[in-house]
View 1 (cartoon, protein in one colour):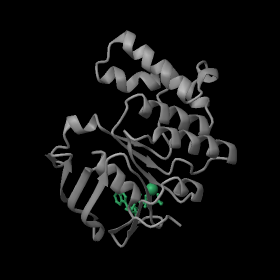
View 2 (view 1 turned 180 degrees about the vertical axis):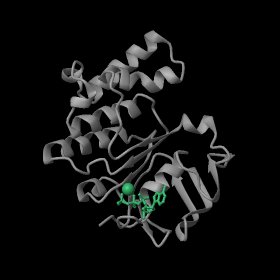
View 3 (view 1 turned 120 degrees about the vertical axis):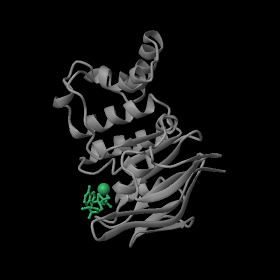
View 4 (view 1 turned 90 degrees about the vertical axis):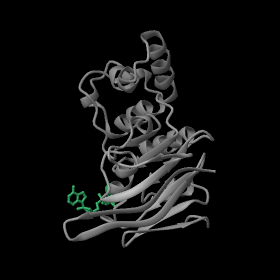
Length: 221
Ligand SMILES: Nc1ncnc2c1ncn2[C@@H]1O[C@H](COP(=O)(O)OP(=O)(O)OP(=O)(O)O)[C@@H](O)[C@H]1O
Ligand SMILES: [Mg+2]
């Protein structure tokens, strides 16, 4: 079943046509890797899908509901989460960073605490609760960012190179966490160059070249 689909999606920066995608559809509960050369538009596509950037034109469907980017609907922001390659953390605390999205959604305090505690356990962050977020290592920041996304239980998870710039141990921890995130309830698109991460994606691969998406179901790499 198609969960998120876009058609006739185009995006240019000045003279350059970056994206010209006739149709892209993501099935519910599947995970995809998004590959493509540096500058091919992977981050831009993920940011458009999450409503952080707008395309020049394009229409979308989420299940049976139609949407576009003028403006990108708030109900869809509740379903689609983008995790930046170098996540920005507020200079408050790990707990506050994870609780932020729940607070923004009006989740009441007791429920919020329960869900944040579950996210901390899930991402094994318990020993870092007193560490100022700006002092965390790259791998720890990535785990906070994943916990902050996980706590919101998104239907669509968009990860932008989650293992880039991590040492071997942090990289493996991040791969394991992404694996744990991607259950049958979550459709995931993972932009990456990381072979181990690509191998997680089973058979679904999206490849961006010259602004077009090549979508296939043959084994990745
Ligand atoms: N706001 C902007 N204004 C002008 N050009 C932009 C803007 N955002 C992105 N670009 C350009 O669009 C192209 C695609 O960028 P994007 O970050 O989406 O690529 P990418 O595939 O994610 O690359 P990488 O593998 O390096 O992360 C790049 O050439 C970039 O310079
Ligand atoms: Mg990128």
